[in-house]
Image (cartoon, rainbow, N blue to C red; front, top):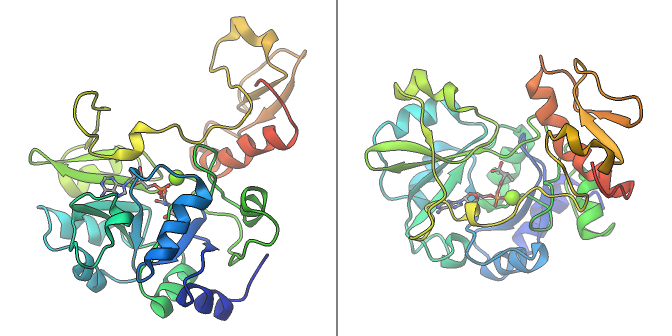
Length: 286
Ligand code: TXA
Ligand code: MG
């Protein structure tokens, strides 16, 4: 159910959850002031309590409320990529970021979204805690309709059109004197080279100790359809082929195209929508 901007501000102040557009994916928002609303996020999404949430702010100045110190080159990263699809993990002001939002960690993930309406909303409500607005494990939402599919037609959301990036923010954390990527997202590793002087490595999934980026421990972005990746020998098991404009595929199968290999940003923009389409059409294998 689409609601107006002023109703969205009021709902968040009243401790309700609403859907909020960003340039990456839609978020499921609660006010950072309202612990009971933050608890509802985990319940509604069926999200593991061990997977912490990102705090979204509208300005650089607000970060000092939620983080108490900054690793080297933080200022340069902030200047280059905010507002935008970057999340940075920082040492948390524990008194101001509810433990439930950080899953009990000493750190907090922070991001300044690029979409103007998102920052205008945060300017009215204060910081918003928001995971992607999807049932845990399922593809994220890049259209308002996707939230209605997951949470029902009456679920309140601020309409923002199609998300421009279509993929989540890239998560950076500082470890052993280097920035590393905790989650791949809309910013590719090489875009950090001019700012950091090196390409950040992608954090390996740790088997023995607690993961530095807990999201790595859980299944994500999966449609109900079974996906067979790149195995031509198994093509007959699939009902449709997901492919690219430039490639040729057997005529025996219907083709759903991600778009052109020359435009990876467009492929990213439509990825989750296409994965969701498989389930709407009740396709079992692709
Ligand atoms: O683009 C995005 O980041 C979207 C929009 C709505 O802003 N949000 C999003 O949130 O993707 P979510 O909850 O789906 O993913 C949060 C990711 C997880 O991988 C989580 O492990 C990581 O951020 N994260 C959050 N806080 C963390 C922390 N304190 N330490 C390490 N990783 C953290
Ligand atoms: Mg998510």
